Amino acid sequence: MTNEIRKQYDRLYDVPSIMLCVKEVYAVPDRHIRYAATKAFFGTKMAERSSVQSHGVKMLSLVEKLKDLKLSLTNDTYIDVILQSLRPSYDPFIINYNMNGFEKTIHELINMLAILVREASTSKAKGKRVGRWKRKKGKGKAVTTTASAEGAPAAPKGKGKGKVGGSQWSKANDVCMHCQGKEYCKRECP
Figure 1 (cartoon, one colour):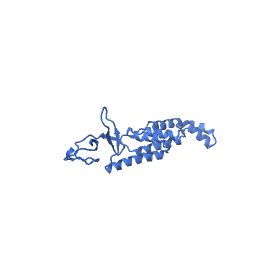
Figure 2: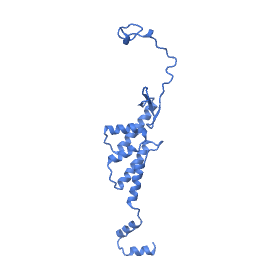
Figure 3: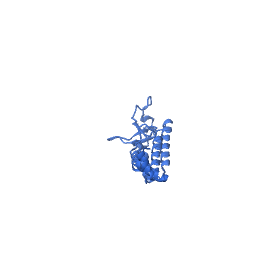
């Protein structure tokens, strides 16, 4: 310590008053720390290739940091910000979460997201289609799209070539389910 600083603190006799003066002079104000923490929390977005679990852990650490700074936000506010930070591919989950009115903790929300990704990856590995219906622009039927392991929609499936080597449909093979007449079906039954 320099002599000038030592002279300032010579008039203080107890340790708590000396620590208080040192904090006032050299400490970073809590307001700056709180500002940086809230900016990081509200500005965080899920990276394109990151897993939902790592994003959840990151958001959870920011929530704990804000709670340590005694920032008074409700659990619902924390959950809303976490849901807003997810990629757009999680919009169906967010809509479902909000429509069903779940009352979950932050840990339960992150667990639900991890289960969603796990189920999507296992169903894709088994060959099941985890699909969503989307409308084509203009006239036409809806097409299904498959979801990747991260929950992001993939390209829509096209019509394809159809059956290869399959037999053509003919009325000669039809039998009416109503009267067992040949060459027509129930819809055309007299």
